[in-house]
Length: 266
Image (cartoon, rainbow, N blue to C red; front, side, top):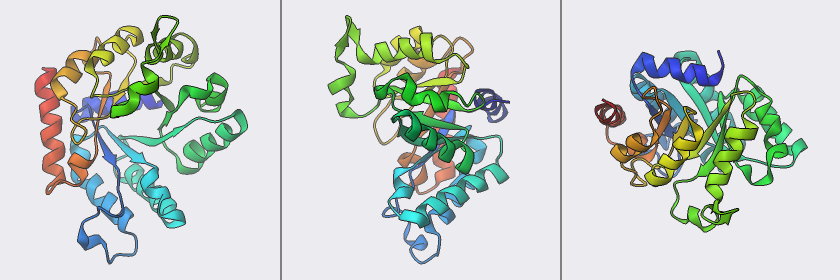
């Protein structure tokens, strides 16, 4: 089973399009984790166990582990091992936004897919196909390529016109028409820009879209679903991070988000 099939199966198993983002910022962890030896790992284990019943995917933002050095890298790997061991059906996403010249990308791909064992990774298309080819060659893994990101300043470059259409549209068309030979591509379409998401859906067909920006960034679930669901009523990975993991009750927050999505889906 490849990563995309794994996600489809999980969506049906738990009736959810929710992805919990493990943005486990060491400076924001609850005070009770200040005195433990492996705070990010212990925090992640708790969040995973509390939210896994309502989530089809977990997304690990590399920045929050790299900032704590070797200890952070080890806690990232141990957290991923814990997820695989206790909830093996959930899709694991490495939010790294990688993209470099070929030999560097090959090393990044080995680190993320072989050493750490992630199912999927976010990628930056700016350097072109040859930069992403080492990732694309992993046929059983998912390559989630930045298209229209959720941040406020994304339009500074992404809205620039290329041959009469915005750059994000050119990226979507290129991924769909040229880079998806192995059927393992997804696109990032920010929940904060539902009109653009609808245009991306029209280009991408039934391809799965990662939709960050729900919750703390202000993305509205209703418009996102109307814009982004595919012909099977799926095709979205709706990512919520801070609004879930730093909630007073993460399980309740995850369930509430999952249920809100499902009400809109129906």
